[in-house]
Image 1 (tube, helix red, strand yellow):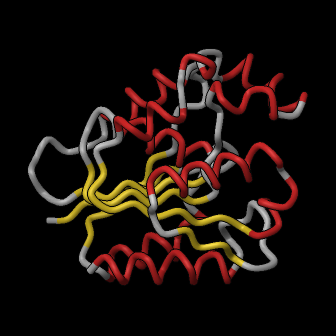
Image 2: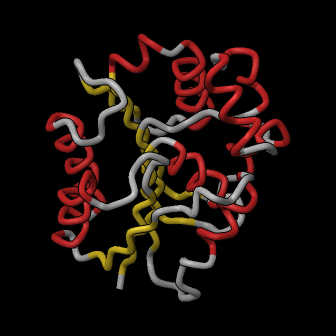
Length: 191
């Protein structure tokens, strides 16, 4: 059976914002596992290792779906375990290449919560990712608002050539109807 692991962003303690997305995967024949990372962990490495424990050790098709920091965790995890589909929604770019572009607030949070982020290279992570099919979704307003985020999404798209869907008039809001519809269209296309 196909498996999809839906990885939440760091401000999402429940699956409420992901209910329709989970339903889309189920409707497409996926067994869905919802994963809320243990945000008490303090490194990207720890967060990725925790996720890897949730991935079945079988040969069935695997899709990783992540939002925000959950998308970064999914991308890094794909360097350690190949995936059939990787759907990155508003992916955080806590990589060393973007440290100089992060806001003071983001840097403060990163030094406290993902203290190893400067050990991770975006370019190397993308190069090492074992992904058959990748997809990127981002809100138009968040691309306009955050310089580091826009640079990261542009670089990710340029280096991977994965389809990029920019959702009009939406910020960092996976719960927005148009954002949800964009994700559902990707899931339906997976088959």
